[in-house]
View 1: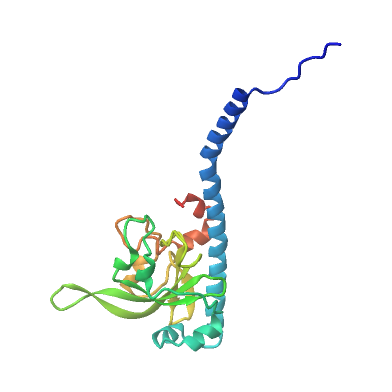
View 2: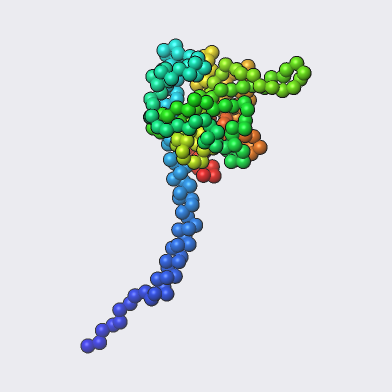
Length: 232
């Protein structure tokens, strides 16, 4: 009795199929990874917004001035309102090497914004208390910088040891008004008489500005696809 020959794939056909699958995977994998990273960063970003808003709201209810806490480096009060994660912290922002949104410049070359007093949040995020300066015209009409009484909070939403470590990608800013106790995402209007507010009332994505990306918090909050549009 004769039996029909069994049908199957030849080695050449298997290799060709695997090659096609490999090419398709290579083409689609970056997109899949990028979308996953964007989703993770957005989730962390929204968590960071809740943390800073709730903490500052509690301080406001207790009539605690965050500016005063920052200026006095009052760690006990900070620990009271921001749960500490007790993780390893950098000596300063220069040790981290934060860059602007485009990655073209190191952010610490911007003399108007100084990230200070790194603090570890319970979820591993890095909270920075930021001192601001504003431009000032002195007697000989040369430009200088003077300290002002407004503050920023900056959060590295995935911790300082993880990239991209860039403003507007995983580092976001909130503006604190000591006169009202209000905390506003940068990229919104602060209604203050200060030149420095111009740096943070819009999402500046210019590659020539060391602070580009520092004003993108409001846009990231309002646009659910903000992180999908980034080069991650």
